[in-house]
Length: 137
Image (cartoon, rainbow, N blue to C red; front, side, top):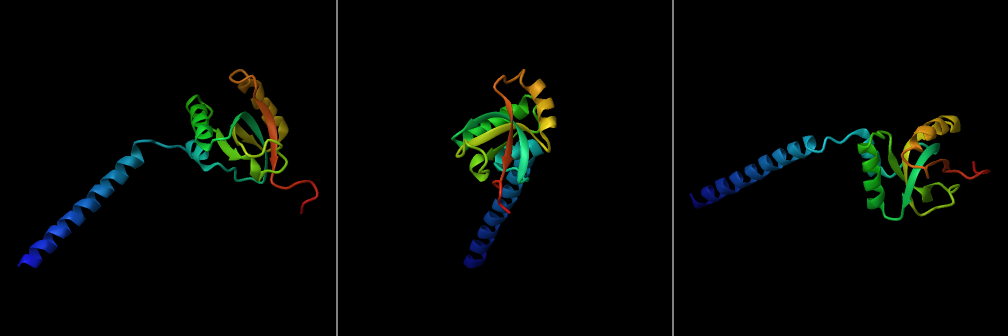
């Protein structure tokens, strides 16, 4: 009988823990309401090997870059993100986390977006990132 009582108590504790865990998982899913743009602030990588980007700022600390990215998202820049410049050998400021307001397939599109964004950040510019150097195959 003692073993049965202990087993039931352990089962109740495990059941409560599992139930509590599910409740916590559920509440954490709905509380932050993370968007795709927020995920880009966390991912630190752009899915393309080469792209133009609307540069906002750069930081040595990834957490600082993520915070800046999140503030851009909150101010309406839904396409903001972060990438690690060392993954792109054509960028001379390697070793920093670049915060961008948007990614573009061509320079012209980036420059059009820059006209408006430069009102928020006069130091913003269009940059180009490429994982391959000229002559690489």
